[in-house]
Length: 89
Image 1 (cartoon, rainbow, N blue to C red):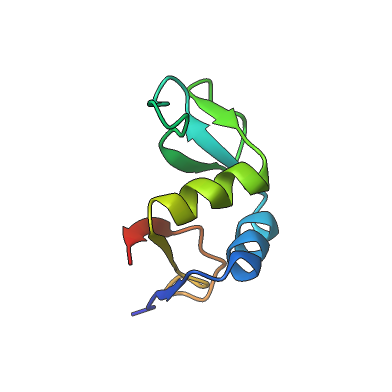
Image 2: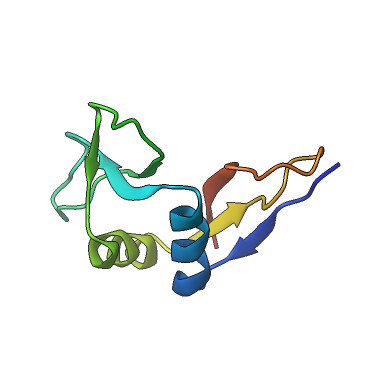
């Protein structure tokens, strides 16, 4: 079984997402008074419900919400994995 790693390192997170063709995004229409929406990663083709944001906005929300990034590099059969989720620190 393949296991996941958890990180809060912005460089590691950005490299992992970009290596898989992902873009930092939020779910459209989920912004609150703080202006921040629900974080997602859009791996394309572009999803209508996702709105692409800058890495700065992405990591600002990531830090404000005190999140960590749980991710898997390889699947159990050794292929590149896109499995990830945001978890509380």
